[in-house]
Image 1 (cartoon, rainbow, N blue to C red):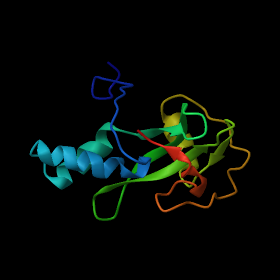
Image 2 (image 1 turned 30 degrees about the vertical axis):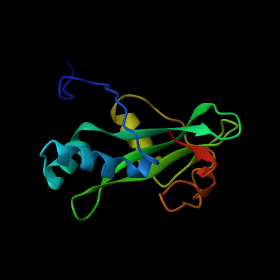
Image 3 (image 1 turned 90 degrees about the vertical axis):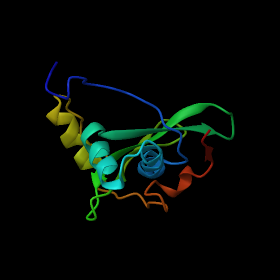
Length: 140
């Protein structure tokens, strides 16, 4: 036990169309369990740091990691996500608006991420906060 609620490094899955949709999807599931909206969002931020988005490439049908989003508190107390890194089909990564925070979170846990060579360039986010070229990936 290391102080992280007695269960460091957990993992789970949830079906959502985008990483940005995960808080809303968990809100719906929490409501089915009788958890009120504010409590769910509080628990969500307390229990999760990031969402790893996995998609299926329409071109070849293979699944791949398309991005990593961090969970952040919105001014209204709800939870949103911010894109930290997007992975292109060729495996290259592009930093998102949450890149600096991702480095901080990793450093807090003893993992040093090197500076991203493109970290000063802001990608053009699509409607979900993910880069707009993510649309060819189908999620199942």
